Amino acid sequence: MTVPRNLSLGLFFAALAVVGLATPGFQLLAVNQHLFLAVNVLALNFCLGLGGQISLAQAAFAGLGAFGSVLLHDRFPEATLVIVPAVVLGTGLLAAMLSRPMERLGEGFLAMATLCVSLVFTNLVLTLESVTGGSAGHMANARLALPLLGSLSGDRATFFCFAGLLALGSYIFLALRDSRLGRALAACRGDAQAASSLGVDRAAVRSLSFGLGGGLSAAAGVIHGHYTGFISPEQYHLELSLKALLFLVIGGPGNLLRPILAALVLETAMSWLSVLGDARTLVNGLLLGAALLAGYWRASR
Amino acid sequence: MLALYLAQIVNSGLALGAVYGVMALGFSLIFSASRLINFAQGELLLLGGLTIMSLAGVMQLPPAAALLAAAVAGFLLGRTLFSTTLGLTLRATPLRQLMLTVAASLVFQGVAILCWGKNPLMPPRLLPLPDLRLGLFFLGRDTVTALALAVAAVIVLGLFLGRTRLGRALRATSQNAVAARLQGVDTVFCHALSFALAGALASLAALAVGPQTGLRYDMGLGLGLKGFAAATIGGYTSLGRVFAGGIILGLAEAAMVLTVSGEFKETAIYVLITILLVAAPREHDERP
Image 1 (cartoon, rainbow over the protein chains, first blue to last red):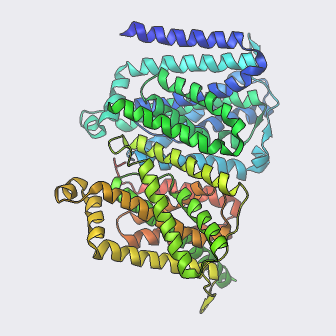
Image 2: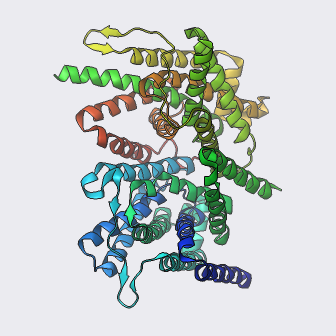
């Protein structure tokens, strides 16, 4: 069973590499936005797919990564090697800490609590205008730079950064899922009370998966923030969290490839809908509703 | 000076709180009957309010007819929401049902954008109630309208749930759907009824909030979330407590605007809601 899974993963990343090499640079702009979303879908899969915890805070974690890295690079432009791990780890720790008191909340209440976390982030960015630029946003002048690789700028370099992050995230996801910790998480997802009675420290294991998801979103935010050259609360708004959750539900939480493919395919289809103008919101809703219903009917047959 | 501040907090807090309270009643009706958190509750308010605004503009509705039209329009919208979400996926996971309400909210928002555009619209005051002075406190006509609508909604809903056969069937479904079904209650019909009643309540809330803040295509999420928070404060079971939750939230919000700052208000309210959800989990541990 392992071979087909590895084969499909290998094929997916090979196809992704071909897309990155063959697509003209300027056309990668839209692809990179979809990859940013796909990394967030994978990040959410750590929380929901492994730990059974819904989260609408992925946008806030991605935003923390973007704002943290860009603002710190403004002060220390040469310190990428220190800033990026610090921002990613810091956000992951924050996510893990937030997860602990929320661990006992049921699905709907957890959705609402994490939705509030997302809105708190957006409103804080708007309120702290002198630091963040508020609704007007903030220019990201400094580029990410690594000692041997140099500046990580441009469409193609960003594409491979996102693809690399997706590959790393997928590796960690699979390694975690197949480990003892992954089985503890699966037990929490299946029946939280039974897992507790078997001695699983639910709050601890779930905060780890939540923290990993938060850290991965933050890493995606770091790349995205420097890539776009401009950060604003609009880019890391609740819509990003909702989209990530929708695509994960459509693809199936716990599956690795299907949610990522759902994000890439459906988001591409939805971006083509921009020609519809004001009708776009309605068609987006219909498309997502149809995908959710199709998944339900397929599963119930 | 302090008295002036207090009067201001009470006036604007009650105006918003009554709206949150009515929204909270809709949330708790659906949640109690089907354990589903309805993300599209705010869009029910938006679409109901815009529909009534257009109807009133075309037909010159008198106040009683406007109230009736709002209730009927909301009822039909809520029933439509049920048919396109929970009604289609009764056996689906709660998560998929929750996400379907998100998709439905996008569809409702899309309809609002296509039919009424993206600019904020200020509906007319359909209920001509006067200002009211109660000693120190002055209640503006928007506050009086919101309170009158909300209190009437609580009383009518209370009578319906407590005194009618259908209302008792709805309560039985809320308490134990399996037992209710064994007693011959059509629980699917009760789920549909809870959605329809929540739609009617949201539409009535639109009559109160429309003249205060205007109606805009993207206002649904914020209002829906406040309604949800109010229902959480109230505990979902008692109509009076749920409505009181809305009033408390409205007063807290108004107090924050005057004492802290308008800019910081939203952050503080969402932090408060998060703390409330986390600190009061005994009622809803491990529930959807």
